[in-house]
Image (cartoon, rainbow, N blue to C red; front, side, top):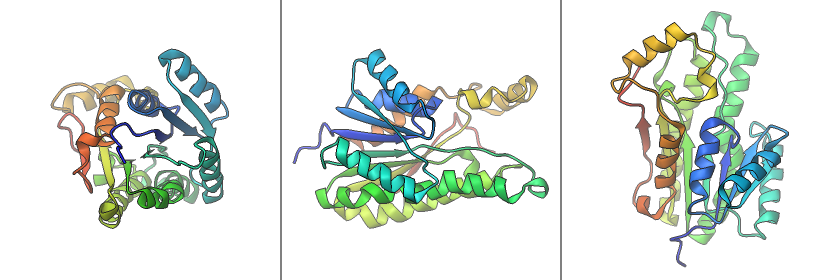
Length: 248
């Protein structure tokens, strides 16, 4: 079977800054892009993307931290695709709840671990077996520069380090089935989530980046699209940094 133009891609966290750009970029090569988010207006967001780009998007509301919700997501996708399933999965959903560890309560820990790490299992489990059966698939997991450890992010760093380990383990399991599993590790990306950072702190952070600027969401999307393409057919088990040379 020729997979040079894979049919369906799915992006979690599909209404955020990175997720939106990833979905838009993937729509250039995929006939349908499914955007998944916990927000009530995700269907409206998908419709707006369709109108803007003239390509096909579908929005599905799901809670990636819940296995039950993701099981329903799998059923919804199976119905929408008439049993085809998906060819590429981008596990992009994530949250931050930063706090110094001495003030971090269980809820701050638990919420980040569930959304950023449990989601990897909850979502991927719905689609990976069909990919293996068909002998084709692309899985891209979004980690973060913070997986190496950062002050005030014990929860986030732990979750994103788990994403790297999850990526490595699955790549070894799935390689024989022509299903690649890779990750990306973005640094600071120019999205709404950074706008809450005070201006002085942001200037100091940018000064520490060798390229002296933030990443653009579309630059992250280009990397994801490459890993989802046939051009990356012999790349698996990698977590690729996209950070302008910046490391904590």
